[in-house]
Amino acid sequence: MGAYVLLLKEYEDDAKVIYRFGPDEERMGIIQLDKGTGKFSEIEAIPDPKLPSRFYFDRAAVKLAVCLIRERGVFPRRMAFES
Image (cartoon, rainbow, N blue to C red):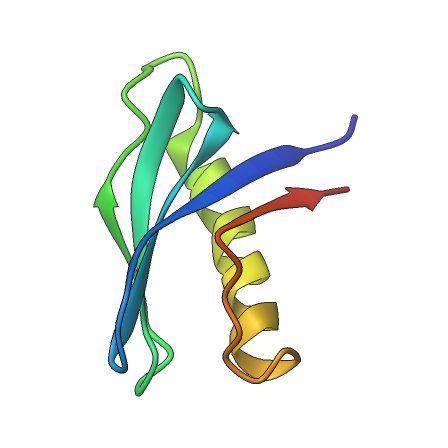
């Protein structure tokens, strides 16, 4: 079974970036990445109790880590994790 996580940028400054994340635009939580420490925080869980928010959070964090490290801090407005 594959995984799909949509990420939509909400806010970015020199210190942090915040994205909404989830399986679609209707069911999304909020993740924050501290650019200085590389620490991820789940600001808001996906508001659907049938969905495993941690599953989506972990994959969103992987995608953001790729942007921070491999893409040298370039965070697009919209992106997705697909496997």
